[in-house]
Length: 231
Image 1 (spheres, rainbow, N blue to C red):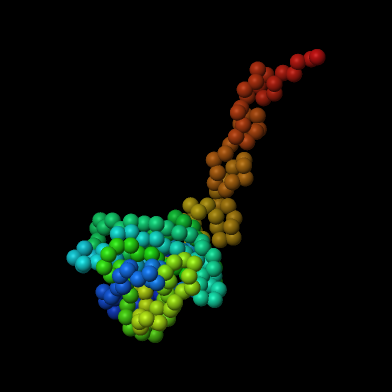
Image 2 (cartoon, rainbow, N blue to C red):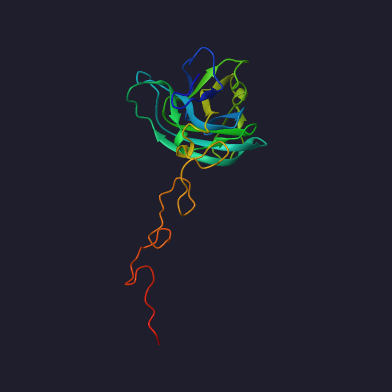
């Protein structure tokens, strides 16, 4: 499956589509649902995919928070990289799989490193979506966890049910020339644009007529240098 935004591939998948199973957000121990993944290649995080219930359902997700962590120590993620708050405002679609773009954030996932993506769903009814069943061919199988708050240890979802959260990570391994940092760096971190007088790649700083970066210009009576009175 391809990321609809930028050449990405979905890390983990599920077979048979979304079956409509979900937990409500009424449990104190289930306020964050997440999946643990290992980056197969050094890639840009293009986005997160998950499932929201349709308007015909008695359930509704009104807003959400996504946390992206790096590293895993014991039974919990280590370092918070990024957090996003979002509202659910359907326009062209109504319910089902959604792609939440994170391309503009510019997060790079390093090959072989462990990352944890968790979502706090707000709304009513069944808002924490899962596929029940044991999908042995899925990279997400057995990698789903939950917890009550972000300081708690994570509990495997398999402790309470046989299934996986419908949360997926979209990666773009070909990020070097496909929009990272506005496309101003190559894969060797070399600048592909002109470097301005302040040393910034693709920057807009310019030197004035006196050779001073972002200087005021020839503002003195004699041009660039003020007249020094003799004493």
